[in-house]
Length: 611
Image (cartoon, rainbow, N blue to C red; front, side):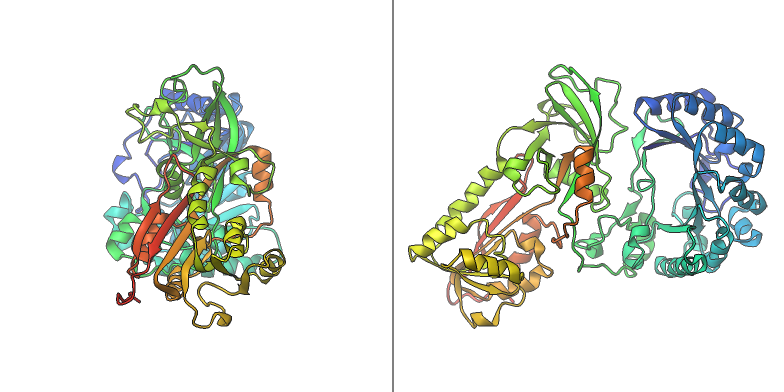
C-alpha cells in the first residue's frame, strides 16, 4: 500500500486546470516531509509517493528518497517529469528505490502539451519517458482531457507507443482550482470525452497489435459511458494508495472520492455502481445527468472480502482503544474499507479493496447495517452461514467515544447464532401456511421440511417454480408431495393457467430477479383476495478472511447470481406501489443477521390493486 505526501504546491508548469492554483506559494518544510515519511513507515506502508505541486523542484528530493529507502520502503513520484529528463537525477533516484512514477503528458506534440501546461515543457516531459522506460518501474503517463486537447488524444497514443512498459491513462478534467475558475473554457462534456477516449484506446490497441504494452486506462469517467472498458478504470485506490497527507495536516487521511457523486435519480440500482466513479460534483451541478445511461442487466456480488493484513496489537487491556489511545491514530484509516477486529487482547487489521462495492456501500454495510463476519470455514464461499460465519459488532468501548461517527471503529466477535435466531422467525411463519402456496425461486429448497409436513397432512398444496431445469428435476425426485415447474417469476409457467394462490413466497429470490417490478406485478396478480405475499432476502455482507481464504475465494469459478442487494426498505418501496397491506417487517441492523423479511396481505374482494 502507498502513502501520498504533498510536499508543497509550487510548480515549474502553469497548467490552467491546476488543482492548487490558489496555494502555489505554500510549501512544506523539509522536516515536516521527513516526519511524514517516518509516519508512513509507522503505519505499515510499503511505498511513499511524493506529490505537489511539483516535488522534483525541491532541493531535498534525493535526500527524501534516501530516507524512504533507509526505512525499507519504495519511493515514488507524481510529477510533470521535466526534471526526470536529466539522466543523472533518474540514476540517483533509482539507487534509492524509485519504483513508481505517475507523469503528466497532456499532448503528443509540443504544440498541444505546452498549450495545456502553459510552459515550454514538452521536450523535457516527453524526454523523461525515454529515461524511465525499461527501468522496471510502475510507470503511468496521465493525460488530463480539456476542451483544448479533446481532439488530439490519438496523438498522445502515438507518442507513448514506443514505450511498451508505460500505462497511458486518460482522465476527465476536475472542476477544482483552475478547473473550477476556468470551468467554461476548459470543461468538455463527459459523453464526448468518453467517446474520444474509447476511440483513442481502440486506436492504441490496434496500433500495438499483439505486442505487449502500452496499456490503456481511464479515470473519472462514468463506467456506463465506457462499455467494454469498465475493467480499465483507474484511480488512487486501484493504484494501491491507502492514505495521503497535505501540507500542514497533522496526520494522514484515507484517500476518498468525495469530490464525485453517483446521482441517485439515475445511478441507484445501476449494475456498475460499485466500481463507478460517477460524476464530478461540479460537473453534475452544471450539466446534470442527461448523459448517463445506467445499466441494470448485469449480476452483482453479494459479499466482499476484508483481507487480513497484519496483527497490530497484542495484550490490549480491556476498555483500551488501540486507535484513539495508541500510535495507530484515528484519521489514517478508511471508515469502511479498514477493519480492526479485537479478540482476547489481540487486534488484527483487515482491508477491503473490492471494486464490486463503492466506498459508500462498504461503509454502510459495515456501520449502518452492521453486516461484517469472520469466515471460519475452509470453503471458497460459505453456504451454511450459521456454521461458517461469526458476526463482528462494534466494541462497547466505542459507544461513548466522541469520534465514533468518523472513526473506522473496533469490532469484536458476537458468539451468537444470529442466522438461526432470525431464520426461526421465518420458519414460524412458514409452519402456519395453509391452502394454495406458490414458491418462486424454490430450487435450493432450504425450507422443505416446513412445507412437506403441511403438504402430507393435506393443509397445504405446494407449487414451486424455478428457472433452473436441473434443480427442478432433482427436487421432483425428493419432493413427491410438490407440484414443480420450470419458469421465472416475471413470466410464470403456462401450466399454472389462471390459478390464484393463498400465499406467494419469494424466499431469498427477490435480489436474483432481473426485473423485480415485473415479477411483483405478475405474482401479486396471482394472489387471491386476502392472500399473503412473503418476501425474504439478504443484504450484502463483508467477510474478514485470511490471505489464503481471500485468494481461494477470489479465484473461485462461482458465478454471480444477484442483480441487486436491496434492503427491506428498498424492496418495500416497490411492493408498496401495488397497494398491499404490510403485516410484518424485519429490517437489518447491527445486531441482526443479514436476512430481512416483508409480509403483506392483498385487500379483500372489492378493493382493487394498483397496477
